[in-house]
Every structure is written in structure tokens, then in C-alpha cells.
Amino acid sequence: MVMICCIGAGYVGGPTMAVIAIKCPSIEVVVVDISKPRIDAWNSDTLPIYEPGLDDVVKACRGKNLFFTTDVEKHVAEADIIFVSVNTPTKTRGLGAGKAADLTYWESAARMIADVSKSDKIIVEKSTVPVKTAEAIASGVRCASSHP
Image 1 (spheres, rainbow, N blue to C red):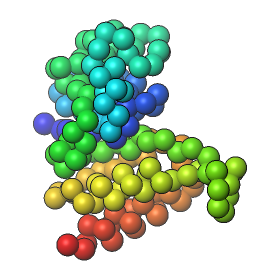
Image 2: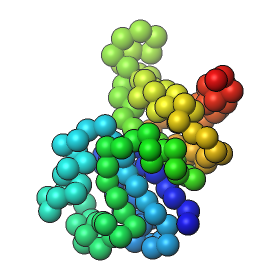
Image 3: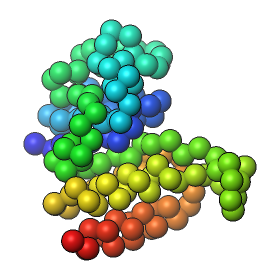
């Protein structure tokens, strides 16, 4: 069975994974986030975001092939495909302040993926990121995973 893990249970990750889960019932989809209150909301009757029809989609799949958890490293390690849907706020200081995306969360996610992965992964950018981010992240993941 193909397993998808999405890092980030926000406005992009949660709805995207819910649609994948309902359209592909044979694929296990796990949404992970470090925020327990956010995960608890996804597992409740009151979702943390409103999108028309989203409640019905989540309720149809949750507990079957769609799961929400804070057990990030376990599900990243087990996944075949990892969507990274983390926050990319505008930098508030340093080079590019007020204009460029702050990739701190993306870089952290990439390092963690490299640290916990024992098999090949497909990593999908599902965040608002600048051009060439994929190349930089791929290089970082390759370097991090090649060092014991």
C-alpha cells in the first residue's frame, strides 16, 4: 500500500490530503503537525478551518485512510511520498526582510526527513516557496542523509 505523509496540518496540507484520501481510498494518508491543538481540531467535529464540503470529506475518510497525528517522525519514516506544507512567512530580518520567504520551517522539515528516512522518498513541495527551493532542499537532504 502506498503511504503519503503530509507535514503541516494547516490551510493547505489538511484539505489537500483530505481530497487525496477521498479520491484514492487505497492510499493511506497521514497528516502530521507539531501542534497538538491543531491535530486535535482535525480529529474533532469542529475542523480548524472552513472550506465548503471539507467536513463531509474528512468525516468520510478519517479513521479509514486519513489520519491526523503529532507522531511526525514515525510517519515520515514510513511514508513513500512526503508532502511538505509548512508555513513560509515573509522574513522579518536579515537579507530580504519584508520581501523574501523565511524557509526556516522548510529547512527544518528537510533535515528531519533526512534524519529519519531509511528508504527512498518522493518529497513534494506544497508550500509557497521561491524558485530553486527544490534544488536547495534536495541538496540539503542528500548531504544530511549521506552523513551518519
